[in-house]
Length: 171
Image 1: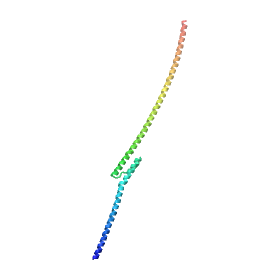
Image 2 (image 1 turned 90 degrees about the horizontal axis):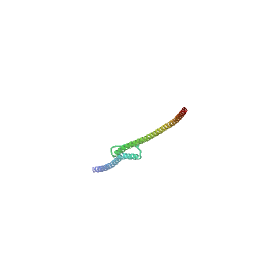
Image 3 (image 1 turned 30 degrees about the vertical axis):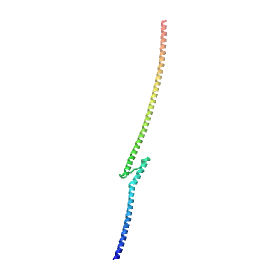
Image 4 (image 1 turned 30 degrees about the horizontal axis):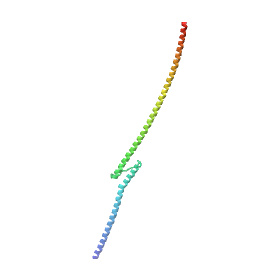
């Protein structure tokens, strides 16, 4: 019995050592697995969204408005991504408004040039009409001068005839 008890004690001590070693190894493995899981969670929840947000910010600062920003979560990185998306939307809207203003300025300049050309054409037409009226007035004046000269000549001839007839009558 004493041999049996001694053997049982040794076996129990060996099993206890084995159990402690198994607990230490399994605890260490569990700690390693937990650390790996924690690292994965950090990468998925912090690093990747932060990297994506930084890439989107770099693209926006380079002028690429087509970059797709996908805010994830309500943590700090998610809120920064939401703010960046809002900034992108406002920047796109500002670019659209700027393009519309530039187009409106071009249309206004074209309309102004067209109005100036129309005014110049109207001025040329008016000047041509005034020149034609002046030519007509000058022709009328020349015609009146000719008619007046002819009338004066005919009156002088008639007076000469009357004077000659009066002289004959007096004689």
